[in-house]
Amino acid sequence: MKGSVAFLVAALLPMAAAAAAGLPRNEPVPGGVAVIELPATVTSPRVHFDGRRIMVVKHAGHWYAIVGIPLAAAAGTEELAVRMAGQRPRQIKFSVLPKRYPEQKLIIKNPQLVNPTSAELDRIEREQAHLRKLLDTWVPDRTPALAFIWPAAGPETSGFGLHRFLNGEPRSPHSGIDIGAPVDSPVRAPAAGTVVDVGHYYFCGHTLTISLGQGLYSVYCHLNRIDVKRGQPVKQDQIVGSIGATGRTTGPNLHWTVSLNGTPVDPHAFLIDTPATSPAVQKR
Image (tube, rainbow, N blue to C red; front, side):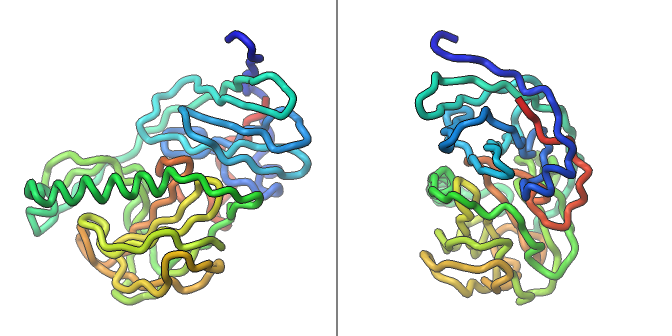
């Protein structure tokens, strides 16, 4: 490309080094997170992927791009656009590896939650547009929260990325994970951040969204109670609400979505207690 220099991400850094640096788990698959070392520079590079601004953090003297890969992405080569002060634009290529997610079949007793009416579809479209705009919002933060705790005292009952069938009809892949626990069990902030949205939505029920910095968001759905307000800062492990069964759900649970650069990614990439078994950080 004219006026640019291209790099291919090829060398690998052992995952233990990534964990020591405080970076999320590198798993460059659809729905995963790619952790890519950037060329050396004094000031923070500005990075874009597919037209969206990408998180950039500094660890151990190196800059890293933290890239959320859409679930719909195909395996192959992708490209970051990198701008550094006083230097020519660069393109950094990285590999997206294939991954297949299992299927899940659910029965929803209320048929309108599977096939909404036209009036309900209008509401759903407005709500989804609002949430997309919210999760696309870039919030500057030099040290975004990258180490999460498990947000509720319960087991994971439904995994990320599942190909879902509701009453036998195919639906979009599962954009988060579900944690099962009784109604009114406490829900805690996964990391320090700021509450940016509190609302009640058709599918998600009572919903809380926390900004964690640089396009990283934690979204809690189906809540029974929300204990914080829009604009309020929260600390890691702070109780922010309680588990419920509001919206489209088969029973009490916390649906937890983590969104990075406008795309849902597997929350396990950021969990502190996640075993370091993923591929290594990709280096230029």
